[in-house]
Length: 89
Image (tube, rainbow, N blue to C red; front, side, top):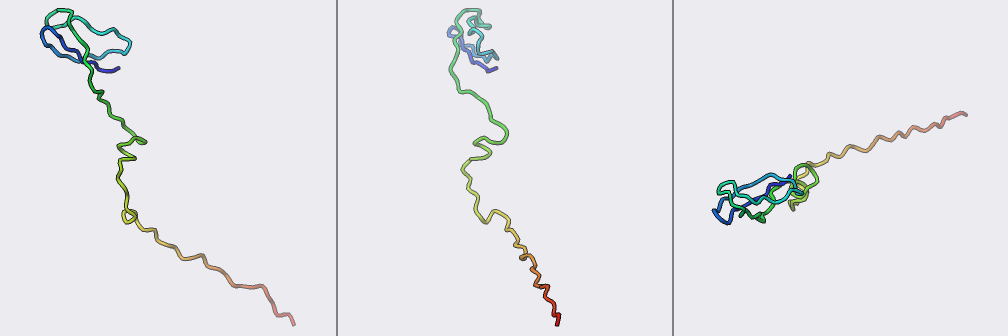
């Protein structure tokens, strides 16, 4: 459920209310009792967490090849030159 900001046009009281999106806007100010509350348009405040989001995975930081640890090359596998030729004279 999102938070909505309200202000009273009569007394200037401001407040935030946790409401469902389907709930009707509030009208009565809790400070002065008048039906002069107006819903404000404000930026939403949420933070995407986890992997797969811009902040953690695609923030534009380029990794230099020198940042990666060098892979040690292993010697090539040994080949056997044993042949099965026999000298049967």
